[in-house]
Image (spheres, rainbow, N blue to C red):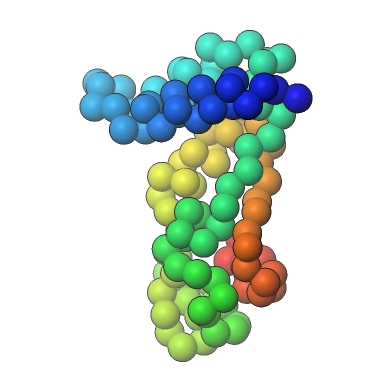
Length: 119
């Protein structure tokens, strides 16, 4: 396992990259920083919270069924509420996928079926 300090330093580095105002896009900056880390020192998995991280709401407040919306990062619940995926989170997930860094999810929510519908 990686040390907590190593993981915290990686997180701080990624946050700084995502808020930097350099000529590179934040995505390029994050990708460059992750590529500099030797494979054996890269995280073995990165865990994301769901509500208000991957999307703009609390999944437990939604009404089933949850259906795809008008674009790939939008869904609509049974009451017509629009749920949007975080564009930054979606781009970060794509970066992690390109580097073959596994991701996991965690949530305090108890309505697993609602979260799974959104995923």
